[in-house]
Image (cartoon, rainbow, N blue to C red; front, side, top):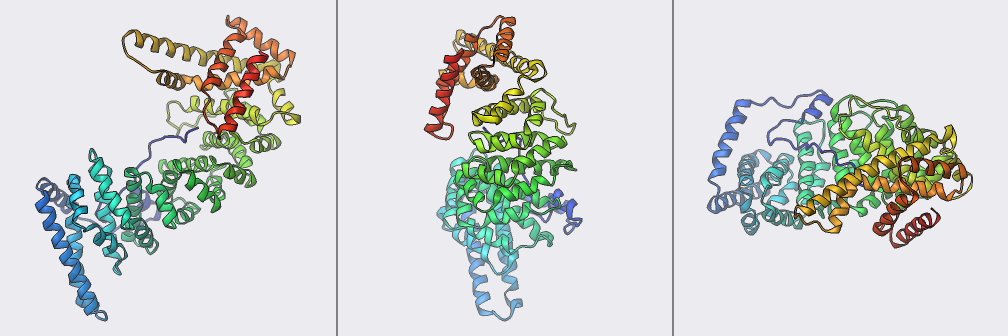
Length: 533
């Protein structure tokens, strides 16, 4: 299963004093007013400079910066008790840090910048006693690592990021952020910029996601922010960064689980169990929190924490309320119950079957504010997966009987629905297979893996899960359900052999679920269905 891949809105901020709109509107303050004409002039000036940046210009900027840095260090040592005496040197240092931003227009020169051995000097300024100087560095790093600046410059970007990480930029960024206050507009801007730099570093070097969590207390800081009850711009961006750090890192998922992260994220989504987000930014924050939850639910130990924290009950409540988070709750349950029987058992015990099968029957509440084209179809696929997980996780006893009885009640309407889904997905997969065959006739070569992936994209995985559910029902040996399945297949001029072919393909291509043992168990179960039908 994959975490939803809705487009994440970047919260990178301009190098000026503007706070992001989300933050400004939430807390009710405006940052210092800025002369827009001056900003435009500066921007034009910057563009003019960018055109002339070369190695000679870089060396000139670096030499000037190093000189200003030495002057500031000397002045601070000489006039320890008299800040006014070294104030001018800090103004000069600030000015030179601003000048270095022009290098963002010439990322191909980053290896030269690294070779000049200036990166350590820049990074160390993050611990400067004057927080304004430290924040100047944050803004500089934001510009240098911006995705637009780095476009088509992958190798120079990696050289710079490697140098930054080697010189402890992650530790110093987080340490500096910890001394900033959101109550101060300029410092709030620096907090956003810091998170943006970390996001940019992860984009260039994915290993940074684990490094920053190993070396700093960033995860703890993010947890504190997402637990704030009122919606704030910083809470939204914290949720986004947290989701990025968790998405492709089992180590981070486990680490956050050990920090009571499951409870914290559940606490965040629980605020929306009976209410909708008020703004698009708040909607995105809620989706980010559910992304975090689904990532956390990948390691087995976090599934246990989820069940113990009554996460199953919370998701069912959210579904019953039919608010904005309805679909996200189904997704979280799907992650929780995949290959984890205790979650499936808890789901049945707390009367979740009625709620789940309402969704299975297509009774999905539509929220006008959710604009995604495939929203209903995505939920349908999630519910199919959820029902398949229930069958896989509950193999015997009273709970199994209660699950099977759902397919008997109301004159087998759920088997009718199951066969409706089978036919629909089967038709889609067949059409895609025919299209791929035509492509091959047109001399477009596709290997078997690519063809299989194309069919998965067209709905093959959902078709396979429907076939697996049919296998479970068939093996219950309930004569009424078996007769209904055979009748519906016959009406479509199909037979059990068609279902068995789908099951066989699934058996042959089943991936490593939670390891080799789980894979072999799944294949054995599918083989049992094939033999029984």
